[in-house]
Length: 350
Image (cartoon, rainbow, N blue to C red):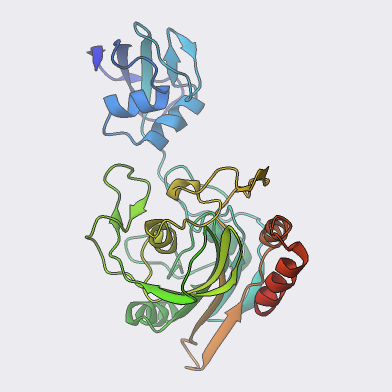
């Protein structure tokens, strides 16, 4: 609980086009030891923790009149001042960013998205997006009514997920592709490495998904409520501590694969948001952190929006995932046998 909170009249920042609102809090004994960003997010429910972190990075948060990191542990009696400035309006702007184009014609473009790239602009991610890269490459994309940040986008991949993604180049193509996604006739195949061992050789997860009420940045399939979701899987390789699976999505809920396997107690390797180890271990050995979920969109199949032909496109497994799973194989009781089995399992995805 904060001991003091006053809100002076909004004041103009020099050189700013918008007003900055200053808020000051004094840390109580009950709040001592909390991270600075967590403390401020609790005091200011209208701000997300991500937005608080942005303000910290911009130097708009001071602890006893000194700049501090978001990870700073607050102490009783410290005075925390924060200047709250509205984010500038987000726009989709062309940027010269390398892209791996798998296919393109006048109606669609199929991209192999790199891990770490955000599909479209959102809070905290205005630059370096796939949309910005496509606008530079293609000059124009069809607009989505009421949503200028996602031109041509009919589906998305999470920032940490690599792989194949289709984008519409015309309004007609956008409409027809969107209809296929709604009708669930688009075939989406993923590859994932899971923590732990799955016993059945195949299965289907049909747990509803909703937003996690305790951690709003993630979803959950443990609440017993939410939107229906179906994830089918089959095992490609089963190791002593990990399972490599091929996944087919029948619905496209936010974080669906990640939430579904976390609900089984088998999170995707590297997916720390959903409970995976930050530094995977193999017996007494620690593996180098992957730095992102071991999740790759390997194939997508759909009807071409103009020709009507059924088409399928493949994105090969990227080097970081191949390198990581090779290091996993080395920790197996019979490393050479494991490596041969993994190579055989991945052959169709390379």
